[in-house]
Length: 128
Length: 98
Image (cartoon, rainbow over all chains, first blue to last red; front, side, top):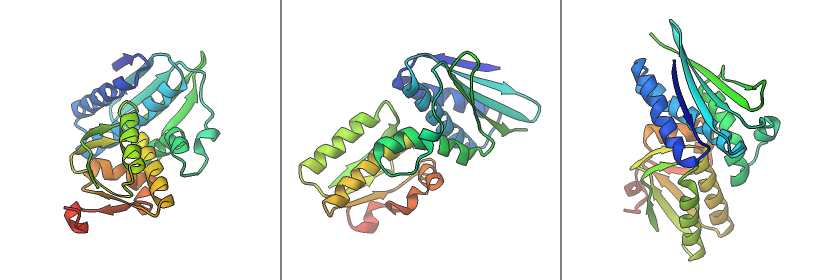
């Protein structure tokens, strides 16, 4: 298992991308997949940081044929329907399109509320 | 006006990017070309800035051209379908901006 915890500061999103890319390369993912992972991580961390000023965790679990990324925030959860309204307003797109991007990159991505508050975004990549 | 955008655009850097573009528009620059060939990463916060810029320029009968997108940057336009909204060129020499 690989894990990164960071405080809710936008400056650490680049660190989160570096961490995720390093883990993906450790599992010998193609560079195109590494780019997709970095984008999905950036979107999930952005949503987490914008949701609340609490630490964010990235946890990577490995299994025989896949690795699974979890981005866990301790915020109160976000209204998924509010994030999916169409539109081209910059504020709206900044808040709402992140989840759409993650699901476009990883169609099986899941967004789930945590039992103790906050939200977990989870997506898996086949490896090996 | 040609703008070189380098490095990475995310939640941390997007505010400065937005301020810079809006300052240019406020100064009367309504034909803007952005060279993205040295941009290594951009996520939806960067897209949001560009959409805000595009809207302001359209209202002013202006033009926004994006050029030189690396594959990792082109990907975010592709998955959002915004490659159909923006004018995207292989390089700025294609549009005579350089």
